[in-house]
Length: 130
Image 1 (tube, rainbow, N blue to C red):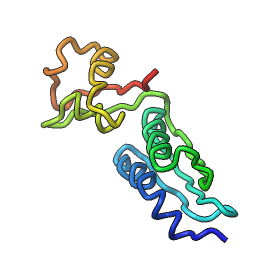
Image 2 (image 1 turned 30 degrees about the horizontal axis):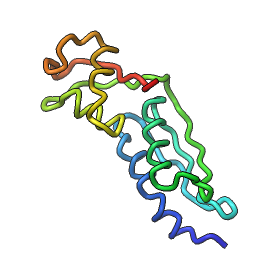
Image 3 (image 1 turned 45 degrees about the horizontal axis):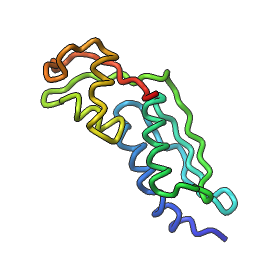
């Protein structure tokens, strides 16, 4: 019989990643056992966030044989984001892609000529990485 608490601890980074996007509408709906596997049911707001969750799953266990996941994407491929004071495209890239080095993809997708010049309050779209 699978140990629910042990599996929850193992996959806690996945649950934490989903929870970290709560302000965008991400929600963990269930964490329980499905036979011998941990079952995580969640809704995320975009394919961008789903990809970030998927990356976390693969970091925890590349085979994820003890995980059954139902992660539903509620929106489209892109993730909308309102720039906050103190933000940079590198910081936004780190949040959504796990690396600060993809800021140019965000700049290009939004027609931002100079990534160092972004305005707090501006709405941008974070594209999924190809």
